[in-house]
Image (cartoon, rainbow, N blue to C red; front, side, top):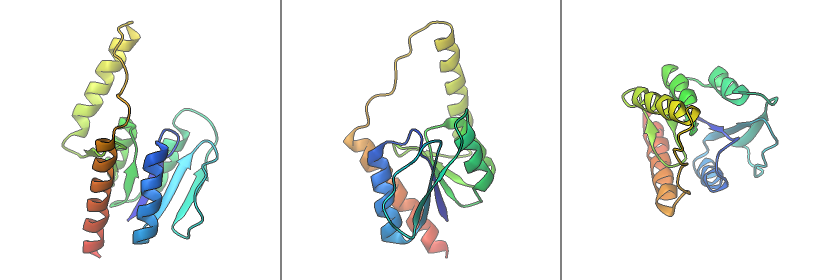
Length: 151
């Protein structure tokens, strides 16, 4: 299993959790962004800088991801695409996107976009809490452990 990170919008605290997990478990971690992403020196951690543009980083992840890989993203359309390729997607708040829940998430996202485009204020996401960080770290550990058990 490789871990791919949609790094353009990934919170720093989540990247730090990922760096620790990659080093602790020896899991390959690649951050993909359209800007330089600072990473600690490690044989398990690298980054790919893509050109600027709409969905360029997302498209690079979809191109490279393989079945059983894990993608860290809050981007629901990207999550849907990687699930279709047999990979898993985990958002930075610790929610695992699955084949069973991704369609509902896509529909809700489209609905909220429609509301916003018609001028209705929908508010934004709440700030990342300590419980969000814990949920992410816990689910990341479960996924890495589950994959390690298959090898």
